[in-house]
Amino acid sequence: MSLPSDFLGRMLFILHEYGPSFLRGAGKTMAIAIVGTLVGCIIGFAVGIVQTIPVSKNDSFAKRFLLKTVKIISNIYVEIFRGTPMMVQAMFIFYGSSALFNFNMSIVFASYFIVSINTGAYMAETVRGGILSIDPGQTEGAKAIGMTHFQTMINVIMPQAIRNIMPQIGNNLIINIKDTCVLSVIGVVELFYATKGVAGAYYTYFEAFTITMIIYFILTFTCSRILRHWEKKMDGPDSYDLATTDTLAYTSGMVRFPDPKEKEDR
Image 1 (tube, rainbow, N blue to C red):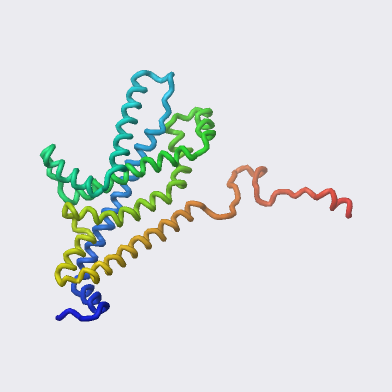
Image 2: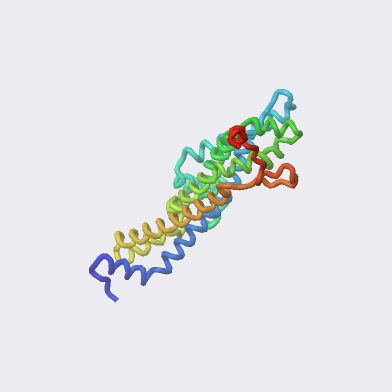
């Protein structure tokens, strides 16, 4: 079958011949982006919470030394991975692990690992900012009733902070969907890498990458709509009644006291 002469015809021809390659590449892209974002969020929450642990003079020397050391290490991790391109990180980690530690990473493991730790560095700062955005009075109130720092974080601060940082979590997912293309430098067969092979078969680079651009847009747009819907669900209804077991304190249908002016009119 010969290659059509018109642009749209060539695009349809490429889709017909190499549609499965585009689908496999898109599937790999989404898998890396979703897993990398989820693991990165776990890393970010851990690092962000550690960075906000208060240290007082009343704490033991061992606790203060340990926390300071952990915070320094976490700050170095965040600054390095936020301050260098993920493409360079991929080359450094994939080839460096073999050269320095004689550890040969598989391409699949390397792709998930690189995206996860890169996302974790960005999420750490996001989580730290989300925690600090909560009114300090809530932390003080939780401690006043005997809660530990861990209990305060789990039961009081984090449920509110998660809602505040949900847009950034979604933004990181969108970024990861697009940025997985840099993993092609270590041989990860994601959407961009697959497109290069398709384009080189017939030298139809414009047509092939037009298809890829549309696929990327569909993936990111769909994810952004789903995440936006999730955010609205977390907001809850616009109007609500406070749930209480005390009928005397039930808020719906409260007694309305008459206006003194109404009495005078009567």
